[in-house]
Length: 363
Image 1 (cartoon, one colour):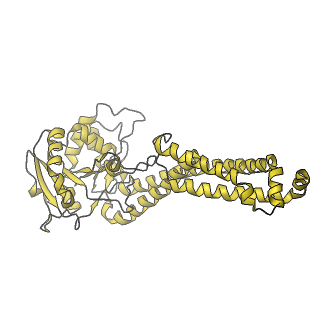
Image 2: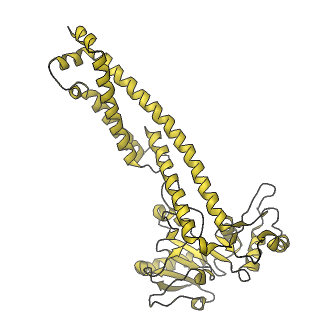
Image 3: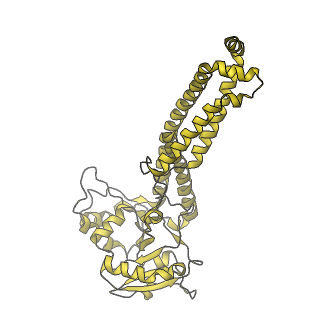
């Protein structure tokens, strides 16, 4: 029962994630048209030690090709746990670069659009939604600890500002919107070799080529910074969405197949144990039936034991045996209700077909 709930919960989340990625792609298709990401492959060469190379590639492309950086890993939904890092650990921040400000407008409290003129050199600029204004000191302190720099705080109007991820990684929001994040604007304190490499690896950085053959257009730069062994192609951001949809659909097939096999096995066990109960207690059941009692009265102990077993499963999943998997408890309730119905119907069918023998046995 526990594994059925686990696998069905994951299968349902796969459906939701595939739908969210598709809706995000539809919503943002015009905005991301023509942009490409820089995937990193490690089939023939390791990327270890190439952090500086990708950092130099970033610096060479960010201004010339309107490179957009938006890292929102904290808001990506984990298919296993069913939670984001924001929900699980309270990590409610994202990172952008200054180009994002023109690509996806962010509006200040006074209604004006925030531009890179608001950035202060040597300080980490942080956009904080008005709803989180009371956490300003906490966020400023975190910035100083993490980056060793003072914070330039700007409050933004979350009612007028829509922050989109433009990334194929599935978010809870079906249109790729990040809900009211704390926004760090990358400068020399944040955008260093290590961070840029991590951002590029996650497809959080994308650029707009000037020709219809992106890889050959950027090949001189790719060779110049010696990353041709790990970046063998450039992917259109729109293609990343389709690949992600295909991935979730494939995972759905796997978990749905496992769930179906487990459900079939469970139903077989339910029918077998119901018949076994009726066979073991045939004399008592026949007496109850002869006296005019309802069948539910006859099989009440079996129903009670079934309910207790589901309560035990709930306790185990809630407080112990969950393997870090987020469970949809409505599946447990539905499975329990279905089992109760199957027990009743199978016992009814068994007693009806064997009633004469059961009465003779009682006599």
